[in-house]
Image 1 (cartoon, rainbow, N blue to C red):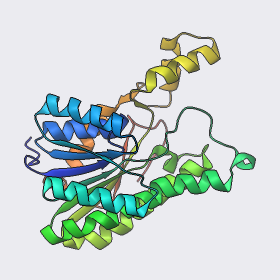
Image 2 (image 1 turned 90 degrees about the vertical axis):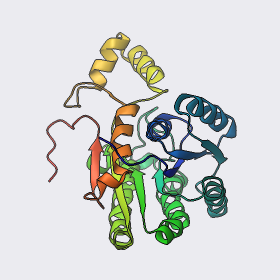
Image 3 (image 1 turned 135 degrees about the vertical axis):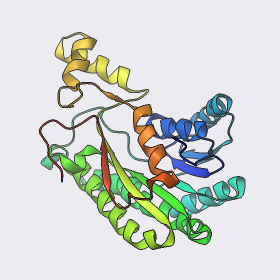
Length: 266
């Protein structure tokens, strides 16, 4: 299926690694020129060089702090100037998680809570505010917000609040921007194989006194497909949502985790 993405442009925050990098790669393969943004310029430049060589498309590295409004405005201006316009925004910048247990009620501090919300929820708002005028002017756009399955599960209070907030933000943005030709969706990844996964599995195996294969199998027990979903498989879904073909989906949340065991969402 032709996704009709060839010649379009995208801005991806959190684009130097993980799911963001996988999305950048897949969009590049579909003929999209991409600006990738995160805090560390060295990693961005390496990723941009790698993906440009792999796909033959332009990749523009831009350093940004999504907790800072001025930094975001500067990022969007650079992306628009370099690419000519911005058709697609993928909000993927967030605090790195999954490396340890979530804080319990007595362990949650205001600093921890507000840093998480400022980077992800407010960061997504700031990015959308800066990009939406470009999309409105051209009468077309796609915004995809990465959230997470903590929106549908207990066990991580701050993560649940943060991700539910992203889902609520998405629906409100979709209703406001939809009539202007801009579709907004949210995807909920779960346990995802990225560059960090091998280390996480090794740490879990050592902690539990089992093999790495056994640790991975245990980690995937809550997934209906009984395996860890790869970042590139999430990127396939996001590439579709970024395309004109996704017109029928707006404001909705899509889980991209291989199926959550026993849960029913309707």
